[in-house]
Amino acid sequence: MTEELLAKWREAQDKLRQAKEALDSFQEFVVKFQEEQAKIAEKLQFPSVAGLDHEAFKQFLNQPYLLMPRRRDSWYVVVPKFVDMQLGWLEWTTPSYNVFVINKYVRWMAPLPREIEERLGPTPTTQAKVVDGLLKVSAGMEEQAWQRYRKYLYKRDQFGIRIKRGYERHLLSSLIQDGYLPFTPRPVDKEDLNPPPVGFEPLPHQKEALNQWFRWGAVGVYWPGGMGKTYLGAAVCAMVKGKKLVVVPNITEKEQWQVYLRKFNARDVQLETYSAWHKVQGKDYVLIVYDECHRLPAPVWSRFATVESKYRLGFSATPYREDGREDLIIALTGYPIGLSWEHFLQAKTIRKPRIICKVVPTDREKLSVLEDLLKIPMKTLIFVELIASGEKIAKHFNLPFVYGNTKDRLDVISKNLVTVVSRVGDEGISIKDLERTIEVEFLGGSRRQEAQRAYRLLHSVKPEISHTVIMTVNELDQFGRRFLALEEKGFKIEYVS
Image (cartoon, rainbow, N blue to C red):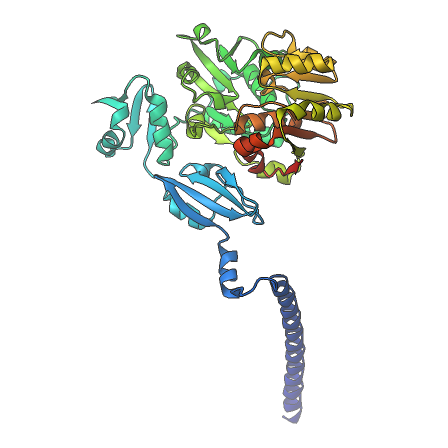
């Protein structure tokens, strides 16, 4: 009995020792934890800020933005610049804050904070689709849809609710703003496909886009420049059987598409510019590709979206418009892919060019600044807005000038170290050895143009790339909002006088 008692005592002593060791270890952890928290708290102290309310500051860290109503179904989000948050469209910026605009379809671009999701309201659980001139909605929703979208509709029958001729794109826009995804999912039929073309080796983001296209049959792809949109589109043209239409902004881009279409031996492809409506009117295609699809919402170009096709693809690195009709870009192309560039930035597949705004007193000084820049020999595009200005600069510096009447534009650019280009060079040009772009003239405050010109550098393989804009003081005051297109993607602007 005594031995049993001693054994129990020893067992208790062992457990007590183990418990003490565990308690000591825990206390050491607590001390270390407290020290780490103290260091963090110390970093959050701002002795120079008089009267700082630390509790209020903690609340700020939980929600470091201000959400303000803008107009119906649209809000401003005010975010301090030291908070890395990109959402919606950057409306304006101050030295301390970024002001974004969001609406109900912004949630398609990237995940949003919970509070903002709640303000946008729930995603509709009912369905609303536009099919062959008809608005088709979930059972029991017909009267509600008729009343809400009445101005776009003219008749109800056994087939659905008929849409007024010419109002389909406006109805699509309204459906998107209400949170609906109004595209008719039409998975790509395997019978419509050839095997992938020889030499087509898609990268992960291209595979993802291809899979989404297989699923939806209609997608818009909004990757940065140089991420292979044309490469993917030409490969899809080779894969799809039957008649295809590719619509591009200008002859320069037409030349570039021809290179890729030949590379993949894509057959039965009609390649036209947006000005060639008379060549496609009344025809139908298996696939239509809208390159630089941000053009589609313009009244003149939107008729291309009414051309009959089984499948669609839209491409743009700048899916926004100065008229505010960004929703129609999505409405007229398909399910959006790649609106957020966060993945590319984190993977470091985008190299940010150095962006400089050189501010001069008057227009007279622009040529002097340009002359100084050209003393450093680099592969360069000089952008102008007016043909007369392009001819003047080309003559002054003995440079070639590429504009609307220039033939073999890509060939001219590739053979010369420095080339002056009009706005025909804004879109679609891919120059692998480009090192520098310089803007001497520009289209007012157009954010899209600013982005397009700077994004020419994203196609380059050169290690050092730069984009310089030469502006007068007055131009910066009036048109400085151009730079918002770059700032909202995380690019920094250096202002030099």
